[in-house]
Length: 322
Image (spheres, rainbow, N blue to C red):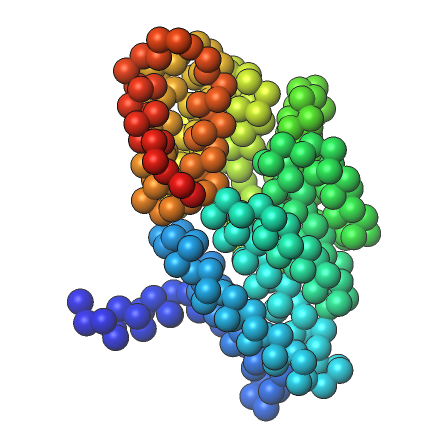
């Protein structure tokens, strides 16, 4: 295929969600904000098929450009540009998380929250605070994640958007699971599912949400909670085939959660056969998050005579430095 035609088509696809928000001609600050947001959207789409390590420098350069434009802008234009900067910082945090650089991820998510506050946008502030809460929940820091989720809800104030409520309830479920509280995790999942039922599936999610929150997302959160809690029935009772959506890296993380469910149920061979597949994806994309999640799974099994799938898994991990 002609390279220019391919890149032009890819750019058109990436541009689609942002075109409706393009500013009126002559609105310089609006044009800059729209162009910068369009670039952030393109980088976010590339994340699904590209190593975060390959995207990192481009996104950092993008952040520097946003900061330079914001610095030179008039005071009344800076809130709009701060919102753009918040989105880009959140993406940088996501990439750092994927690389397994948790310290940088926290720094970037913190920057995203501060930029959202500077933009004076409560909804964006809630989204970025909830994103950090989700990160901490997956990192096993349940209490901190719950505190952040509570801050996110306070930022929303009177805005009771169903997508925000359903997503934050799923984040709270993950936080309770990280804290080892099955009952509260189950309660939060029930609340998330109830909020999803009120959503209009035909309506696109409101900005800054860049994804639709559906029953499938709640089911995936339940699988993740089950993996954290070591509950095979929570993991394996879901239609895991239907959950295998999204890009390869997302599917690999789901497969590792499913592997945890098999391991909790005593099915060691099945667990490590699945984990081996997920690890292949992690190595392909040099994803520190996937590789470390695989190492965590391996640490949960203690045996002096590992079966063949476990030995194969150990060979895959040998000499991996991510």
